[in-house]
Length: 189
Image (cartoon, rainbow, N blue to C red; front, side, top):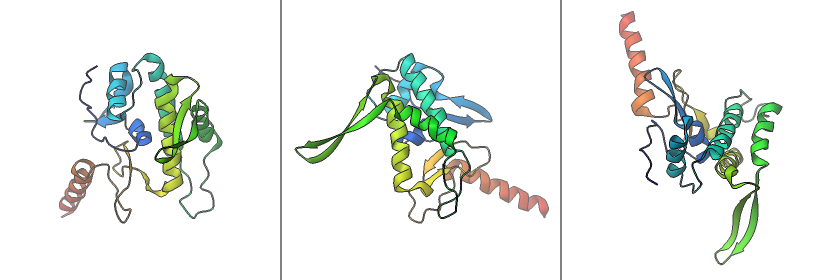
């Protein structure tokens, strides 16, 4: 099945953040790649997920996206601060998605391996996204970021050497912020 090109401004993030980025703002209007199964097919293909783009998979992906958004966008303490826990509701929503699958450990000819198993295969993409989020939290929770531009809703995993990336894209949001600061400075003069 041929899919349309991905219209989103930011792709290639880890699958959990890429699922969040199926909602974005373009020229002031909210856009949603997962508005239909055609958009789901684009997202699945872009992440190398071999699942059918049907209504059930879409419904589960939307549930996972909402659960991840609740977890990612909930203000918490920063690393090293007293309270960096997740609110119970956000954690319960992610856990509800994770309850539909598990990892079976295996020994392969190349060494240790892991195989995901789902109680219902239509939960596969949603479960994989939720599990990926847990892995990001385990390895580098402070590198999960929301774009610093006030009008942007995109998320990214900061892979910069010093961990100071602020924008989903320097070419888009970063330049808009610079232009806005420049305009404010020249207006004051």
